[in-house]
Length: 310
Image 1: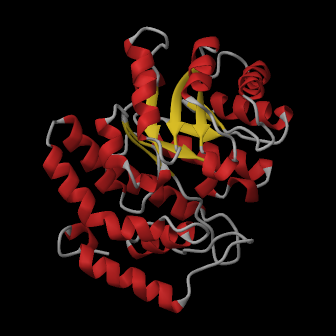
Image 2: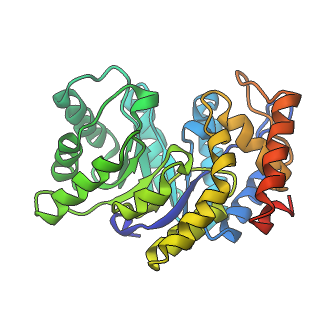
């Protein structure tokens, strides 16, 4: 698949665990099936919200192979391979590509500060994994503390043909999308897909600025799918109406430190995974927080019947 033309929603998949911390393979299959039923165009695994740093290499490989096999060819899978060193990055990247992954995602280490350092890092990463491996730039300065200007992203895209996509997660970031699409319009940057994160918090306007869709993991990915489709069909008001109905829950899920616990709780409520456990270190929700999420569900159900079934 040509990921430079990817669009729609590539769901950032959670990693299901049993209460004792073991990976829940049964829930993993049901989660993939759920994402397919929601209309997801693809999956991204072993990302920040997939608790990738809590898995060892053997678990990462096993989980990747299971999800790739379950997703099948109709739902491409991108695998996060970010690592402190290039040896582990190369090993995981080559293994998952051999297993059928569509590409890999690489985040910059938080030690990078200058534009030259950022561009050089991605050149070295491609040298390590091979220029035959399609890769996604993960631009998430709020987590990685690395600020990539539009010109830096353009340099990476232009210098490295295996770069196929930007996971745009800057905040505020609407002007960055416009600038990058402006580079494309004036011929100074080739086209790559732009899929956006931040829990979908700005998806309504990101699509209007030229983003191709979302790469995030809000617990109602079916809503994200619908919003992107409505925007692509030119139904702006309908897209915003649906998005606005979900915004209170979307905002609640976006809390730093608590977001994954909320997301997993909602996925459990929707019957997607058996347990909302995180692998340690990781905190669950208090009884008060669960009650607040339940309240938001009740309010959402007035506008979206999918919340009534949860």
